[in-house]
Length: 470
Image (cartoon, rainbow, N blue to C red; front, side, top):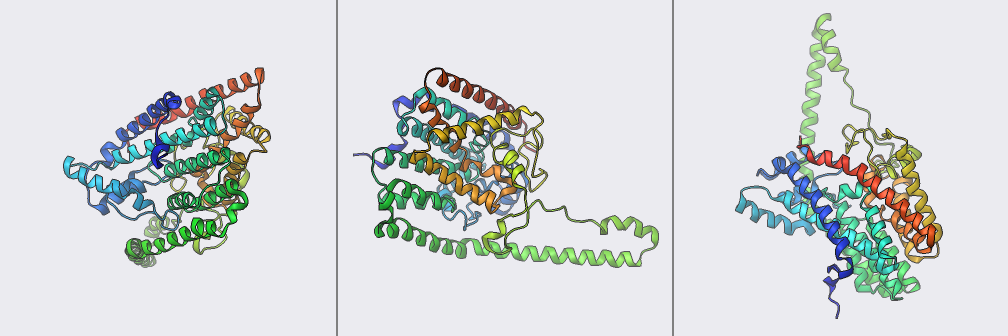
């Protein structure tokens, strides 16, 4: 009888590529720990720790929320978007408290590194299994496409960055693999399994609920619409998550929000009092003093990099209908996630990075175009595959969310681990159909892409990770 956790056992035929992946992700995480060791290991009280990490963590637009949660448990995630994440991580926080008493340092950076390495490792394993076991791709081609996937810039970044995207990418690849195996064996996804996958995928990132539903719909077909399945596989887990989210907010998050609101009101009152004082002094000052004071009074806020939202209320406040879409696609949707831009490397658009950064070399646009064209060719070759259309439905949902509604569009590249695996997955269908000289040529192109992208992205990452944190 197959046990639930047998899925995580490494099989003999995948041991060598899995070992290489383990070395790569362990190295990235070890370098990140060395970089951040001096900043994040001293013990501080919970509030000071949180402020310190938010002030000094600088990796693109990612947040150190996982690091903060493990350091001193606090429900700091947005519960509407990540309802279970703080609780899924809570055992590590308990372990960190025990280790802190034993060692005298905050060990959260070590624990989160181990967690991110495990997520990245199993992302590689399940992606490769989808290629080799579900699609029955040749080992050479499965290894090439898996290596290509891990040569993408933001797959590398999320392999060591303690944000939720690493968990989400791993969970989606597990769901994709389970769906693929069910399709291959012509079996449905049972209601109990759907409920489990739905709860964990949605608990990590709320929008994953759509992808979980699409998964079962593509696998089960008409049987998806059975009342028992709809109720127990989707409705009951959704209601349970919603109720838990309400409980979580009222008990753990609301007191923090009230404290933040009160602090914000005090800061605003103090700022207004200072402005009123300055205006009064300006009115009473002579012309020479006024000339000195004028620049301070005329200071304006930096223009917002957020476009106009559909609404200022609810979740629509994160939408964006004005940021131009074509530069977004070229530079931020397919550009930055595949190949780092040299300028403003891993910069945060909410701090100093412009929304759009261009490549110094036109060759990088050529590489980006080749990757997209290979993906499109793969889609043309596999257009009858339900597995491909499942992956494309996920990709389409993300595009509707980010390019359509504009959610997170100003830094869409940080969300790319949610869809980057669709690119090499589509290419796999092209390799399945290719024969002889065409197959060898495609393998050659993929190998060149892997070498160039791994070298380009690796050099930038090595420079970043080997420099001491500021």
